[in-house]
Amino acid sequence: MTPRHRTTAKDPLRRINLDELMNGGKKIILQHGQRPYFLTITRRGKLILTAAEEQQRQQPTGQQPAGAGSTASVQMM
Image (cartoon, rainbow, N blue to C red; front, side, top):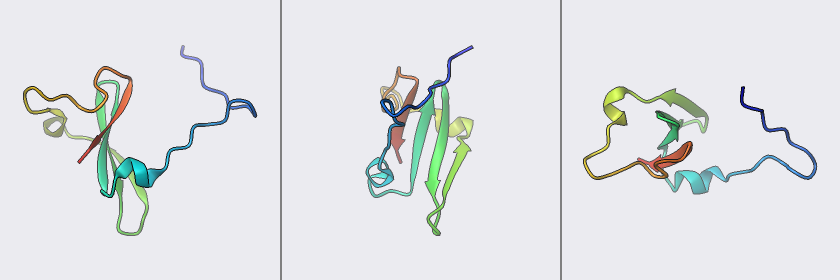
């Protein structure tokens, strides 16, 4: 079983600015291990995380998703 990350005063949770992560877009792919997920900002500004379809997982030949080889990565759409 993998130990869970516990936050303390010395070790706060990492904060990521969503505007920087999205880079002006409304949808990105988050790669979690071998599974891709879409992170989408709705017209009302809410966040939706959904599993990506199998067809959308496949990358064109010679390209890898951003951060390939790590446990989590982000790909801009």
